[in-house]
Length: 93
Length: 185
Image 1 (cartoon, one colour):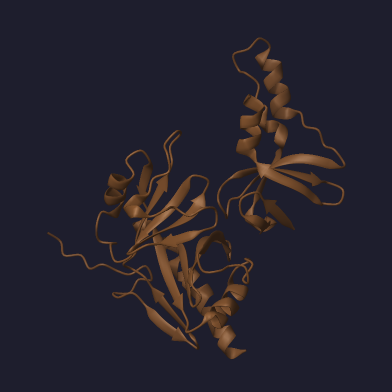
Image 2: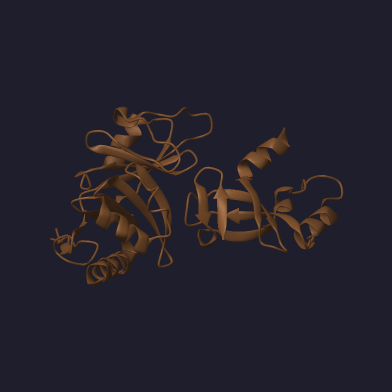
């Protein structure tokens, strides 16, 4: 399996480690009202879709960047990858 | 004061050089290394007049070279300056960046051949990189027998491997085995 790294081109998936659902980037505000149930959902509840899934991969044996990889969990087809930093910065705006 | 004798990364008194078929593998004990990382808002420096390379690149000027290791991060090499405080010299060149000494934690193997063919054959056996696209001036970190290594193509007939010093023996074994299998084939 190859992951199309946005900076380095196609790289062997063995160089990466998998973390999980990219919704982990949406960390709730710990000081806000209702933080406890929000964190409970954030930590324990995950969607487990059969189909297109956005997930976090770490390029450990590479440039050590975090990627958001869009993958089809039924076919293992990789549909795209972008730097998690870019995704997070875009969300802040 | 206690008189201590320095050892090479492979545990010998002198760094090893070995010739296997068309390839020469040499442990480069003289290479000084320091990592250079940008801080938020700091512009890109030009240490020792060197334009830092982009993703996957390696660039050299006289005596100093650098390769890209991640977004906003480079490893800077200085041939023959391992005994000096190279990190301090680099910090003086890039005051607004973070600089860390890396010489002591690493081992560098220089693999040379008369032309590109044996280097390419070794690359194909050793690491999962596109051997054809890995032209002079390329540098990548990748896995080699579960160890993390940097591979640098310095010239058509010159490849360098930078690995963890504590795993020097295992990395050398991997290179040597691959090189011997190439000559046996």
